[in-house]
Amino acid sequence: MTWTKPDDWDVDPKLDLKGIFGHHPGGTPFSFADGSVRFIKETVDPKTLQMLTTRDGGEVISQDAF
Image (cartoon, rainbow, N blue to C red; front, side, top):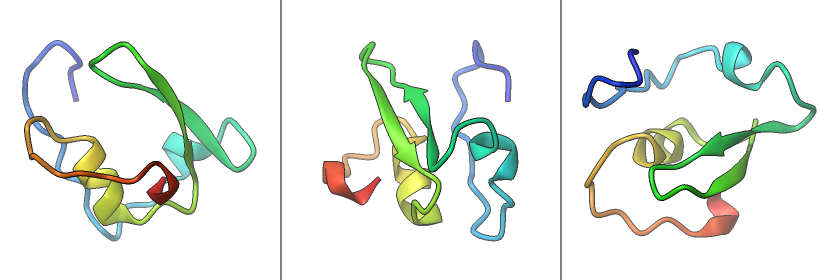
């Protein structure tokens, strides 16, 4: 995905997340559009990851979900 292109990233539930989570033990830091950086656990549910990576979905996601 090109980071400058305003498209959503459709996360396939069967996606092998090793490429994203393979560099840090237990997860990896993600930067968000509001400028914050949060650690996402490698055990995150793919649906939660999809909600975190789409824009303006209106979801309320608890910090302990990721």
